[in-house]
Length: 64
Image (cartoon, rainbow, N blue to C red):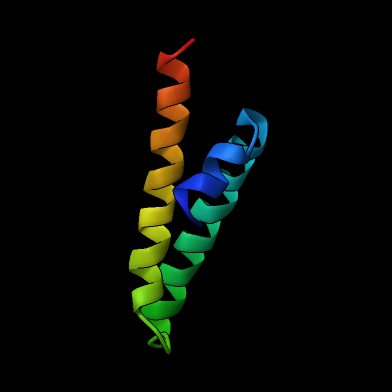
């Protein structure tokens, strides 16, 4: 997810998406521990997407 797409989301949607992405990330880590993922770069991409979303949430919090 690109930063432009993240900025278009409302704060409530963004919080919901962060929770969903974190759950997906945790599931990916567990699956990768049991049997290797076909594309382990997905883990890195998911982690960075979560970081982008959290950064935007923090920026919104500071701008209030």
